[in-house]
Amino acid sequence: MYQSPRMLRLEEDYRSIQELIKKSKFITFEAFGNPPERYIVTYTCRGIKLDALSKKIIPTNFHQVEIYLPTTYPRVKPNLEWLTFIYHPNIGSNRHVCLGGWAPSETLDRLCVRLGEMIQYKNYDEFDSLNVSAATWALQNKDKLPIDTRQLEENKVDMGNPYEVKFS
Image 1: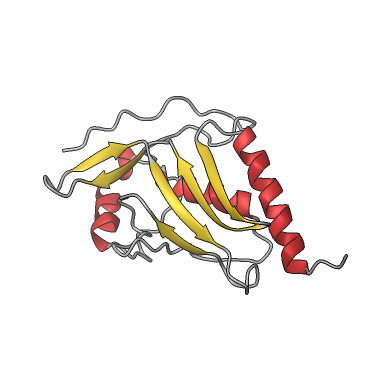
Image 2: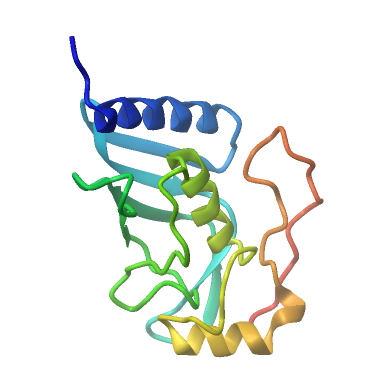
């Protein structure tokens, strides 16, 4: 039976993300469709959010993002929407994500790692921001970054425990 290149890619992406979660203590996912075109990815690494009441930056270890792979994927980047509050220069108040560059060769598992590294502040661009306040905070707090130094995949070298970041 013929399968389109897109369907083959969706199946390969599903397999790759299944392999990723076997290697990660910090990433899980739910998949929707056969093959999946929508994912909800959950991260338990350390990140930060802005508390709505106190307006203070606080650490958080629970993050979720929805990834939708449109019919034009992988030529066009996935649609990403953060489902939990996060304070990051490249994630806007509308919860959309500025990935920077996208290449059709980037696989879903690598995208998930890249998003996790955004949570940890290993991956951010304070000069191309969707959240100016978070970008300013990152510039002023470079000595506190990354927020979490742990590797998202077990087969990589662990750089130690996460920084104990004091937020004021």
